[in-house]
Length: 401
Image (cartoon, rainbow, N blue to C red):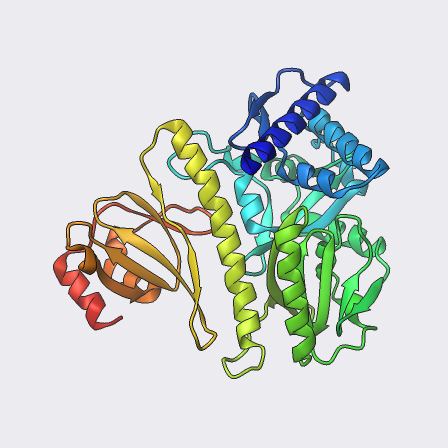
């Protein structure tokens, strides 16, 4: 009953947005896709998840503002003309976006015929496992992501335009932090909070012990502690995971570090007192990202009638505190396999107690079975596997787990 009521509330919200778009003079032919919780027309898709979450969390007049901003964005999105650089130069902003978010803008996924053309794919530069630098044009009601065709029409490179966008972000930023449990939280609240990690000097006046360690659980949240402040980092990562689970526009809690002006993934030795906390945040990022990808791919394959199994990314914690991700390669099942620490090999033809016929680390799997694995070029990475390993290959894997 509870799930029915939730679905009913989402349906009502979608219909309200669709009516509001038409009333505002926008397209009246949006069709509601319940499975995707999105409005669709021609090649345009307006996903409602973040808007709905923001709407539910808002109170009083803020709810009307959330709805009005969403309606304005959805009603005008296809009217954006970015071909004239002189008209958009002053509105260019450098941003940080999840690589999975940018990949989703390129099309629904592997094996489906409606991926976007290369020229309209977002321009980006990955700087960590899960995050990329990108560019947007900031309109009063929404932002438009800069793609390859825009750079081509402007006759400029990504680096040239990114430098302009970064200058805009830097010029509009003053340090605003509040202390919380030993770490610091940015106080801008303008959808560019997380992007400000691109401004290394932002942390110069904070009393940090060690290089800045930052987590970006959503676009409106940047939290930072010093690399030598173990208790603060542990508390910060716990708070980041809570934000990812509970608040709108989630990203992921995987920690980053700023060293000599360069942003990269934050890693610590296995002997560090925060090893398990850092490992959990990094693995949780993988779990969240792969889970979202699986849900989207499952929906698209079901709608298209394609019989492809999308394997789950599973995360387990050992009694020692160590986190390990795993996936299952099953005999006779065409599968999209995520990249996990461990792969389990399942043969349903064997007696029930002996169906898990091998277990191997990812590097060993690719070394022995690389010829059976097709890289789909998806992000996060998945490999298409249709043929099960031979008995000889399984024996090698069992001998070298």
